[in-house]
Length: 160
Image 1 (cartoon, rainbow, N blue to C red):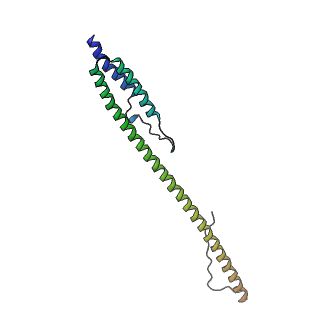
Image 2 (cartoon, rainbow, N blue to C red; image 1 turned 180 degrees about the vertical axis):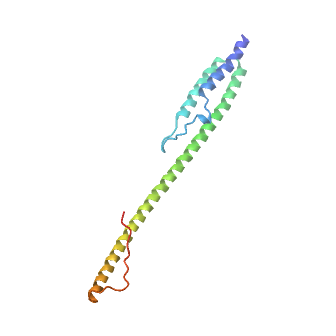
Image 3 (cartoon, helix red, strand yellow; image 1 turned 180 degrees about the horizontal axis):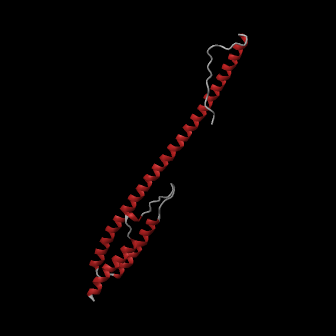
């Protein structure tokens, strides 16, 4: 009978820990979008706390009960520390993702400003070319149809 009692505690602990324990490798690599909060570990810990109470009630020896309670407290602290570390890492990833999105948005704004500036410069270049052609035409008319000896024509790249 004592042997049976000695086996109940380890079997109960193994069964309890095997069904509830997660390692750091069990967490998903695909992180949820910002704004989503991960609650399942909190719910799982609450369920585990209920389960440990049932296990403690079934153990008759006060020494074994206190030993299991101490082990459970140690396990719970480790579990909570790992969960907190995971949450902190996840929040840091969220912050980094937000910073990256803001940087990308700022880069898009700057790119649009530059494109607008390029278009202004192209328009001014076309205006100057038009003035140049008009001046060349006036000069040609004033000289009686003869072209100046050195005229250069500036070509602009085609618009996108």
